[in-house]
Image (tube, rainbow, N blue to C red):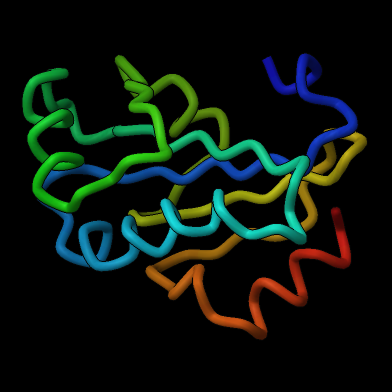
Length: 122
């Protein structure tokens, strides 16, 4: 429940193991957890690809993801709630739990301009 994380900046990242752009962006999403300017950031990578847990674990292992946990959206309840149009999709919520941005498609989360912009909401 998002209300459990009020006071934190929250990122929901929707992905799947078969999604090439998801694979490209996941390492930079993982590195975002280490940014010193984003100490109250909570990241939830949510697999909506109907993959089993083992496939998701292999995906994270292959990409050397070390800071993120795997969340599974089955049967795509959150994907429907947020009316996703494709993946990857990243939804950002401010400290009050309100959506302030939505990124459709992959980005480099390690980009300095993105981190600076995001830290304005921290």
